[in-house]
Image 1 (spheres, rainbow, N blue to C red):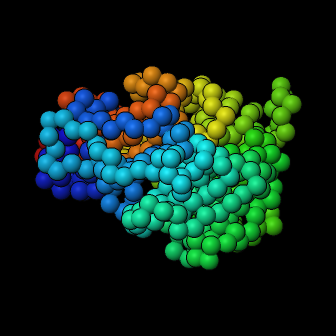
Image 2 (image 1 turned 120 degrees about the vertical axis):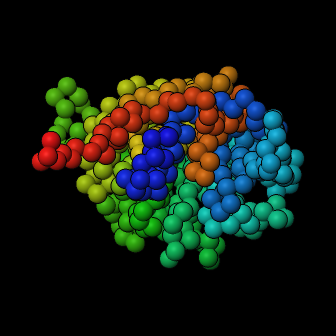
Length: 389
């Protein structure tokens, strides 16, 4: 890092390159925090979300149907700190969900509103100040997952995945279900809006398929992702239109929106080119996926080599997205990890597990697990020579 600072002073590298180098160093050195933890009040933690507006509040949903909000910011930071509970909705509250909360998400533009969905067939839109639902959407079957676009400016749609084969789009502006997307043949396990195109939606199902949609054209999907890229394997009987050889339980777009990561019950993680729909064939090895609920992965951003964080049984597997190289397995939970979320401002990771705990993984200042910088440095070696030599 001192060499990079020296390069910047000499005008060889830009401030952006220096920033990327430091972010890369930080995310490659994540380890369990020795000084910070989160107050424990729930049973199994199913889902987490950090508010994108301020990066100050952590939202959590539990198997006991409770919802909790924590303050994860502390200034100045003491030697040890427990992130306090700000407020909560427990199962004894008349407005709480009746069964396990599967997904929680902050409204993308401020902390005055958040959403939650549960196995009681209901999606709720909450007023944070009153901790009461401002709107509720009821479905015929349990809700596995929902998602709001982080970048949309022309719509306020919430995509909802239920035990039905249909994907429902709910409009926050008028409180109605606008329309449904028909294409899957079994329960939809995951939905995810693109981080680049506001009308692009990815859906995953128990029918082993992943579909991409332009929600302005709901009659048919844009494409169905095929793990064989149109060439059926000689030793397999799977249809060429399947993304995995098992349920697809997790979806996550990369930060630039150009690629999509999917995770299946076949213990495989795959990377797809969103433009062409092709399987990039990056090999991540075996990633244990022993859950039959929505798996909440997360990705880093702004690094030289972005990483993906994948809950895998009782640990979190960390891989370089484009090379598939394993970086580290984060171990600290005592039971299955259900969700993880990355804090882009501080390069921290938060994870929730069946052991009722939320763990904080933060950069270790003294450790250096960053990629080899020699290649980066060689780019700036001065090979100039003089005729006088």
